[in-house]
Length: 183
Image 1 (spheres, one colour):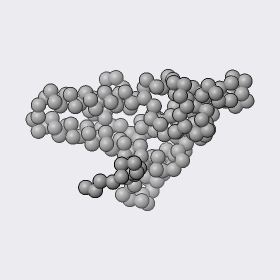
Image 2: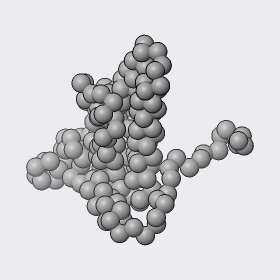
Image 3: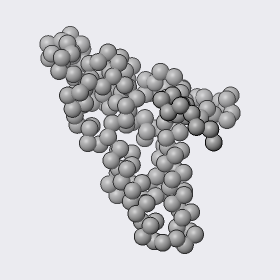
Image 4: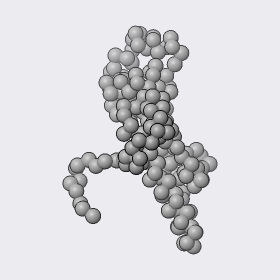
């Protein structure tokens, strides 16, 4: 294995094996519209993250079937499920089967862009993306300018407008538009 320069960014996703599969393309287009994504690369990143979690779950099941120490299996299982619960991908009473049944939509629902839209801080996913990149959104008082930021369960309640942003003023015209649209 070749060791690269540690400061260089590397690709975080895999491209599809069949580039012109109609059903996959239609599903990706639907997800891009629903979640206001910039390009399909964001869908592929979410799918790659889920692939890693599913592989870890399958490895755990294989570890159990080989007759390995039960305590080691339970510790690794608790670690994986605990991580997924903290990130918000799984509920409180989850099991290995829940890890294997995760969908790309579960991963996309944890993005800051989606949560800003769902909480009514923006009228659409596209506007949520714009507000985040322009620095109008903060988590716990700290400005976050990355729409793809994965929000954990503990941070979810701390999403608000950045205090020094003009949009934070309740009299701002855009706030009135958001309130009128019922979001």
